[in-house]
Length: 114
Ligand code: DGP
Image (cartoon, rainbow, N blue to C red; front, side):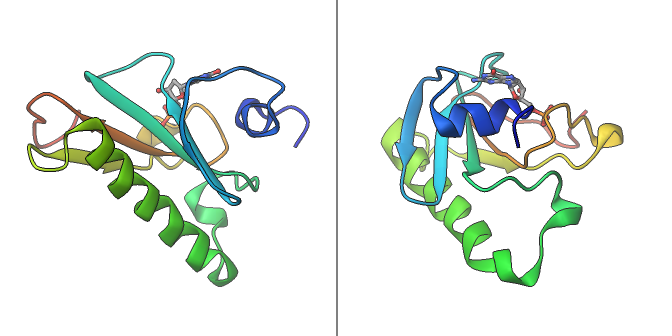
């Protein structure tokens, strides 16, 4: 999508601090980190919200979690603990309408989330 900031990052037309990528997914550091480690994993394909995921995307969503697992290991937070979150729509705090898996760690995570 031409007006999607994460599509532009995936296309390389907007810079990002990329930590992981393969043919289908990309991961980069969040511009406004909420934890010492805060990385966003996105599909290169545009999907606006989790409501728009279809059965055909099942493997792609799985790849996002496999990327998160590898990133947590690389960042040294796999054993201490980390949180993976996808916000869906404005009521959940979604501000960028291209799905992204937040990978947060490096500090104690509280529950329930705010
Ligand atoms: P959410 O609120 O779940 O939609 O999270 C969107 C996140 O995206 C938010 O934590 C800030 C981050 N973000 C927004 N624009 C950019 C950008 O241009 N670059 C990077 N690296 N992160 C961005």
